Image (cartoon, rainbow, N blue to C red; front, side, top):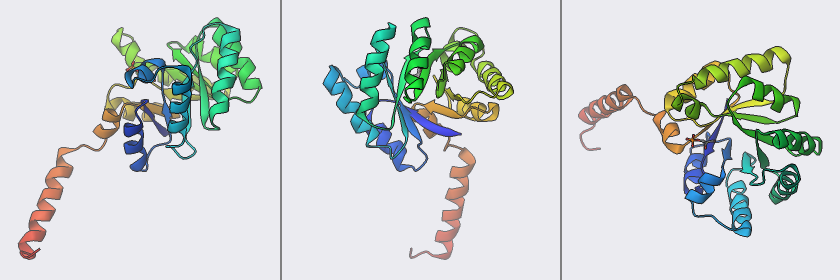
Length: 221
Ligand code: G3P
């Protein structure tokens, strides 16, 4: 399973990349706004900087247009920024048409804002490279986000679809583990949920004891 970071913060991306476990980045208009990145050129420059921070990792960059022609124009512009760019297209009627067209042109697509298995089937049929079901937002509405990941993974497996399941809207470190168990191909996570994977009190207690025992035998060190 690949691990992406879900942020537009260059500082967080560097921190995660330096851990040696990062496979890519996802952004969205809300995350770009959170970093104060506004204006067409500044946004493009920021995507370029992100791409240059993650080796050959995928970087999802989302279109703002909601009509087919606008998505195609924007998708092509985004894809030109850097070879790492994966164009993020929302799961709408125009979005599905745009996914088909851009995928046929060889531009990798991440279909976003997916909340049902039916939407997942449409995106796969249209040729999406990645599919982003939002599990946290489903949990927020009393639907089971993990169950959706499990269902889509099974459908893609049974049907032999190549589209990869990228579990998004991850809220907890446990979500990451559960997505791995469900067979998600990728998880995209806020930094704090990646950091949560490190933590176990017995690790801290064990290390403290090892070091204390070492110091007893090596008082000068
Ligand atoms: O990748 C999608 C993600 O950014 C949405 O997360 O926490 O806003 O539901 P959240």
